[in-house]
Amino acid sequence: MIEGLREMAVSNAASHGGRAQEGAVLGMLLAARPDLRADVPAASAEVARAVSEVNSMDPRDLQREAAALPAREPRREREGLPEIPGAAMGAVVTRFPPEPNGYPHIGHAKAAIINAEYARMYGGRFILRFDDTNPESERMEYHAAINVGLEWLGVRPDETKCTSDDMEEIHAAGGRLVGAGAAYVCTCSRDAMGRNRRDRAACRCSYDGPDEAQKKWRAMFTKSRPGSAVLRFRGDMKSDNTVMRDPVLFRIVDVPHYRQGTRYRVWPSYDMAVAIEDSRDGVTHSFRSKEFEMRAELAAAINGALGMRTPERGFFSRLELRGMPTSKRATRPLIEEGKVSWYDDPRLPTLEGLKRRGIKPEAVRRFVMSLGMTKSESTAPFESLVSFNRSVIDPVAGRLHMVEDPVRLDVAGLPPSVEIRNHPSSEMGSRTVDTSGGISIAEADAGALAEGSEATLMGIGRVRITRAGGSPAAEYLGGAGGQAIQWVPAGSHRLRILVPGELFRDGEYDEGSLSELDVYSEPAYLDVEEGAPVQFVRFGYCRKDSQTQAIFTHK
Ligand SMILES: [Zn+2]
Image (cartoon, rainbow, N blue to C red; front, side):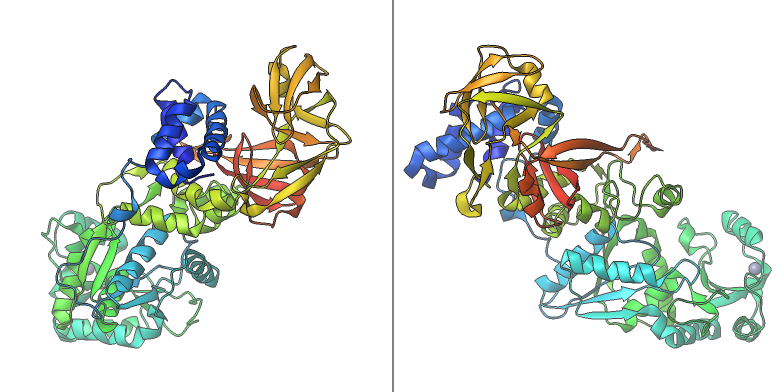
């Protein structure tokens, strides 16, 4: 379809009670695309098709699609991130530091894309750093999944590293903090520590001098039991920023690490690891989602106590899609209970899930860039990603016929075969469909046909209905007119379509969030490449999951 035409038809229909007007849409199209004025009949035919498609939409779907339309001004001109004040070309180093404790999701995509894009904008360097200092929850499986996800997104780091490879340096920095009196070993119980942080009261351990603290710090590497001692930063127990109330910098974890095995037992906290790593890696700018904002003060304080440089920081809003929670707390139990098959379930906002649903990396990228560095907190509906995806897949999605509950339609004078274009733009060629064995249409369409009325069988032509009801019949007229309906030939291919909905509604798992349709498609579906997008006419875009299954992507 001509770029932007569907959007014009949708917006026209939405403002005219669900019925787009061909004349009005043609006017909009020719105004936007003067080049099409050379062949107005061709443009009119395209418009007629778009209008008929849009006018046959369910009104709720139409409203949804209309609401997701971007503002009228061309988006491309405003694309791109705001400039970084004072940043010099060639001197920007950014990083994306995921913890390998889960499958990457759309929130990771945002952080990775923004940091990589800033490095690119300034001809700088982008580091992928696995923040793997929490052996209890990290796994090689997740580490690998992050690599796979970034590759899919097209985010290519200039350098990839793991924080755990710098453990000696991080331990040494901890020792320097102890020596400088900026950190002390706390042997209070977890409860007591929680209480003293809540009450803003220092514990007795904090009165230890550097020598005593040093002795206890060394013991953490040898004889102290896990949970019996932690190293705490001497922050400010009175601070309104709870992060600053003598936070834990190191703890003992006697669990094998997925890369380091049992080499280490004293592991840094997230804040300690980030402060040291960003500084030693020469990171000049770090861009993270807003929930890390409170932690920036601590990283800067740790760097300050060690005389280390702190990168500039920028924050953007966290990206969540409505009804598609990214938290492991929400999704892991559903996977364990078998309610969600795996991390590639098309209802999930994981990169695997989005990919399986048929969302393209280019669409994720454009979506993220359109959000940019805004900090306003909002949960975006899935539809806001759809308009980006549609413009990526529409030019390459072959059109196919598919019907639910097929009913045979006897057509007198039916041509024995027809040639159907695979895509309204001719580059995708056409296919020959054998109609000699007869055709079937959807039960819902059959039920709406009245005797004596006319309809257009898409790709065949106009017919007049000679018998309505349970076993309908028609006679072939040719030309076009009346409601356009799709059909499948005899010997059509049985197929399941998975239709993903919002996984959560009002914060609760929705049992009905994944539905299945039992349908029949043209045999040409079998020739579609696995993973490729198709558009089932009058239904929507799907991704071919297998020979017998497709996944509904979006309208
Ligand atoms: Zn204590």
